[in-house]
Amino acid sequence: MRESCSIVSDVHRLLSPLCVPGTALSELDQIAEEYILSRGGRPAFKGYPGGGKSTPPFPSTLCVSINDEVVHGIPSTRRLAEGEIVSIDVGVEKDGYFGDGAMSHLVGPGSPEKERLLRVTRESLYRGLDHAHPGKRLHDVSAAVQQFVEENGFSVVRDLVGHGIGKNLHEDPPVPNYGKAGTGPQLQAGMTLAIEPMVNYGGYQVRVASNGWTVVTRDASDSAHFEHTVVITEDGPITLTDHFTREYGENGSHHS
Ligand code: MG
View 1 (cartoon, rainbow, N blue to C red):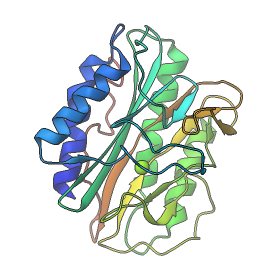
View 2 (view 1 turned 120 degrees about the horizontal axis):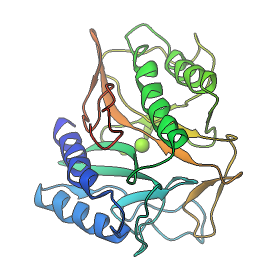
View 3 (view 1 turned 180 degrees about the horizontal axis):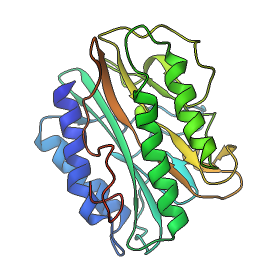
């Protein structure tokens, strides 16, 4: 998992400087795919089965979600524009083990409120990780994420959650970004989890777009997404992905 996660984070490092006006989403996808293959990995999202019978498998390496798109955006030839939020999610399998990581960027200068949405979403993940110790309950993590997000005036998505990860991309347990402290499975050393707050500027409600994949906010407000794959140890959590840190660069999310 260290290897698959290091590929995930290196993809983010490769793409971050390209999150500027004029870059086509399909260019990001192509660069990511070629890089993952060059490292002996496999894009884990590409070909992932759709939920509904009529939904085709996921067609691309990356999920690229813009503004009110929460997750599962499909990269097209559309180009990034100044002031947009672009959320990039990367999944990699190598030698049978999976890594998963996401981050949102502001494209060029953006509004202070978009900047704040990204900063709060990113920090909410670490507020959750502060509770990811053996003996704690899983929903201690969830509740800490939710509390920090809501006290900053934003909302956490309910319909999508983080997950266990290891020999499969998605394993038990589900890792919600909301919940009641003191409930849920007891955390144990050796557990590997993908923790991924999805935070909306407005209401928490989402819907699936007509392509069967892309999740968008119901009120068309902006959304942000930060994700690490972590392992819980006796000494606390270690982030196996390291494409961003808790400390926020002074110029914003893509200086991490
Ligand atoms: Mg995930």
